[in-house]
Each structure stands twice: as structure tokens, then as C-alpha cells.
Image (cartoon, rainbow, N blue to C red; front, side, top):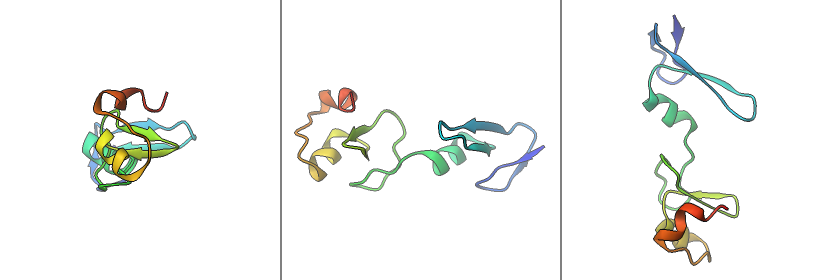
Length: 84
């Protein structure tokens, strides 16, 4: 059994997530993984679960938050391709 690094639960079905930077994290649920690894929107502070929007290396949960904080001029339909 392994222990979740967020909640400390000992669980026989934990899983590991390996990051590009070489980090290895152990969790007992997706909820704990999201809590530890998901970026935080720079405008509203919510966790970015999904594609979100990246503008000039800054993460946002949606086009609205990106527009409120940057001069990106993004529209909702542009959000998926903003970081391309």
C-alpha cells in the first residue's frame, strides 16, 4: 500500500503521476491529484481542470478571465487555441 501525498490516506489502489519535470506524485484519488497539480487561474483563483487558456505563460480557466487580466482580445471560441 502507498500513501496519498495530499490527504495521507493509505490505500491499496493509489496511482502515480509523473510530470515532465521529473516529479513523481502518489495519490489515492483524482480529487487529490487535481488539488496538488492543477494550475490556478490567475484571475479568479479556481483550479484549471480541463484545457483552460494560456496567454504569455499565464494560466486562466477561461477566455473571460484571460481578457480581464491581459490584452489578449480572446473570444470564447479562441480559448482552445490561445496557446498555439
